[in-house]
Length: 343
Length: 280
Image (cartoon, rainbow over the protein chains, first blue to last red):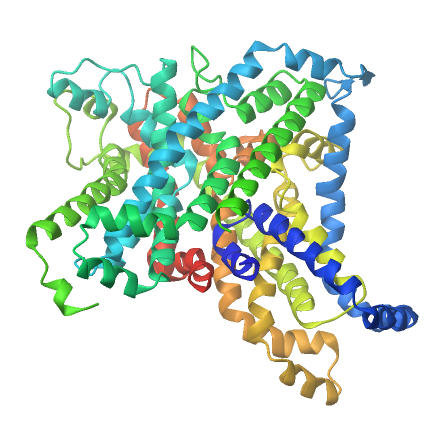
């Protein structure tokens, strides 16, 4: 399972690596435990140690090969992270002297209603987008996997198309579609006698609008992943079910869904990590302020505004750390679920 | 797949195709609507009943756009940034991925784990200090700030390592080593040619990521001359919200390069999403 998930990682992109790292760490620990019980291994280790220095010198070119990553990460990755932790204990506008204020940023944050609203908004948008998106993706993949369907390549191409456009372009297009006056969506609603929806100003509709954009962009992507998963399932199972006279819906819910569970939960984790960091859609759609009722104010948008519009560098860093903790807890929670359910 | 099933009831087939067509329309319609808007004047975009066919104002919309903002400059900027960051990142990823796949050296395991662990950290965590660093380096409004930090991609290294591990055969490397090849020569003359297909796939992936990147360029760039395309589009949308035709013309122009790239490399791009899943 661990090996498989590792190769799968390439497909799932950046964020999902959390999953392999965690699952492999668990796997690793078990391996280590086993190796300790074998006496011969420790002898080998001792022997190896004597050679280590010579080994290092022998491989100096190889260290050179891998060094760019570690150097760049140290300067532009690790240092900013540590600095960010330091900054979260300071009051600083980026120009004047920093002032150490202890935990005051975090205390302020805990009592900051707007921040908690942004947390709530982020979770609502995540929920409204992830559930329909993954469900539709699964259904589409199920349809595409059916032998009744032709032109599979064409459908795949069309469904994936939204994923290659930039979120900025997408937000601009949807912003015009959602315009309250004369936006196409409201025009169509008007045609059917439905009163116009204030997509961009009403909190509930704004969040639904953002969720629709996320669904538009990522459903095809997840469909491709699910389709690959479906194609790797044993075909005999379907045959057997069909012989037994099972309906298509029955096959979907009783065979496809349970077998796809690991992949489904996996895409849930990915969507979680991505969903917690939603920024561009609401930023463009609301002109940066999150909308009149601030329903589009996500955590990262709030972070951006506090840090780069209000120049509250310390406060912004504190938000970043709280966001990190939220993502961490959420991902760990999901990883636990994955490990429990896929066993 | 099998002929018995293909003869299945046509009602069922119709139902399946209905689902596909609905999602097809939803996926493609925004692109169609983008073209409609880009070729019309603002007043004809927002009219009732809506105009749903292509107009003839595309050229005048573009002309207006070019008068308002240095739009093509931003396309050029994006091209420079995306190409150089992709090439640099590909080179570093190939070097390190090759090393991790084909060499045993002291500390390999912990170093690899550290690298993977860095992918767990969300980009926003160090956002504020990263900006402060760029300010200190006087890299605000420069492309260095966009190219250098992303040049080392943990994900890219991981990607290459997965491929090189099986694709580059040890016997080959061994034979070359006996012939006295240095590690550099092994990399350039054996590793690189073999890894070329996966480098191409990773390159497209990295290029698209860089081309579409928004938050970091938004933080770093505040001079219109230095804007990347995404920042330019967002600015355009913010300032000229009354001139929809012009905004949409810009958005269309900015979207075309990636659509072309996707049209050419769609298989490669989609395979890079699925190849691992198929193995798993």
